[in-house]
Amino acid sequence: MKLLDEFKTFAMKGNVVDMAVGVIIGGAFGKIVTSLVNDLIMPLVGMACGGVDFTKLSYKLAEGEDGAVLNYGQFLQNVFDFLIIAICIFFFIKLINAFNKKKEEAPAAPPAPSKEEVLLTEIRDLLKNK
Figure 1 (cartoon, rainbow, N blue to C red):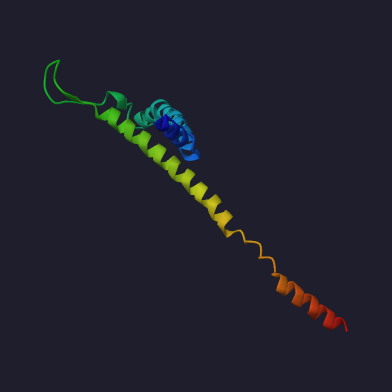
Figure 2: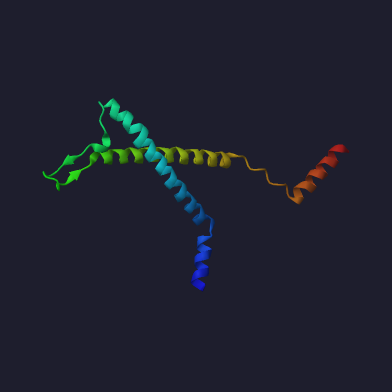
């Protein structure tokens, strides 16, 4: 029972829940980027390279039907996926850091004067008026 309570406490902490939401959104974002690369970018790059279909680029290591094949075209598409995701994450983190920097640069309110300072200010003002 104690173990279950400890797990509930761990799982319901804000950081774990935030991380879970981030993983889910990241998975969905990865699918969008994969579609962007596979369906939009790579066909344009292939057309610019003379009508090459990158998904079919491969090199047979051995002859015959059962020979090993290196599918380097698919690897190139995965590299493009990674680069686009990395660039997006870089700019997102840069944006978050800019917002955090503005929060840090906001001037803090001056501390309230102590009772002694307030009293001394009142005495000074009274002496000026006399």
